[in-house]
Image (tube, rainbow, N blue to C red; front, side, top):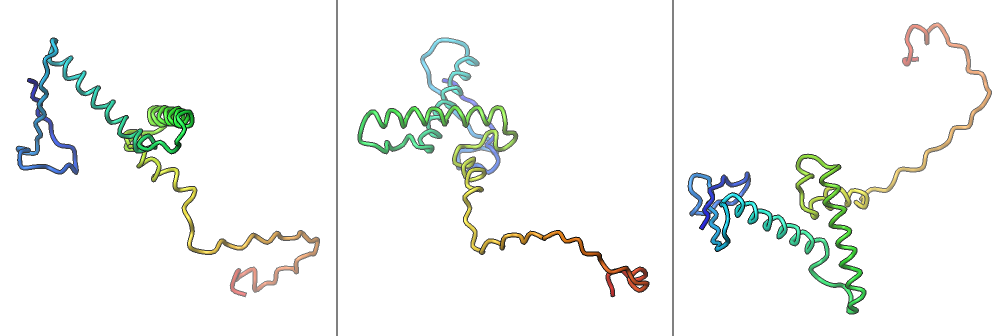
Length: 149
C-alpha cells in the first residue's frame, strides 16, 4: 500500500477527511518494484484517463452514425482532433490555456468568431471622392483660434 499526502489545489472542495488542507491518496498494488516507479506509473495512468475523459467531451461519448464504417471515420477524426489539441497546447499555448481542457479551449477561443451580436451592424463606410477644388484661404481668426471659428 502506498499512501501519499498532497495539498489540495486552489478552489478544490475539501471534505471532512482532508486534514489541514491536505488530501491523502492510497494506492493498493501487488506489483513489484520501487515505490517511486509505482507512483509514476499510477500518475501516468491518471493522465491517460484524463485524456479519455476529454475525448469523450469532444465527441467520443456518442457515435453519431448507425453504420460501423462511418463511426470508424468519426473516431479517426476525433483522434486527429485530440492530437491537434495536444500539440497546440504543448507548442503554442502558455499558462492556464496550456493545461485547459478542450471544453474550456472551445469556449475561450473557438466561440469568439461565432458570437452573435444584438445590435445592427454599422453602415458601410462612405468612400470620399477626391476632388481638385481649392480650399479657401485660412483667415486670421482661424490662425489664432483653430477649431473655434
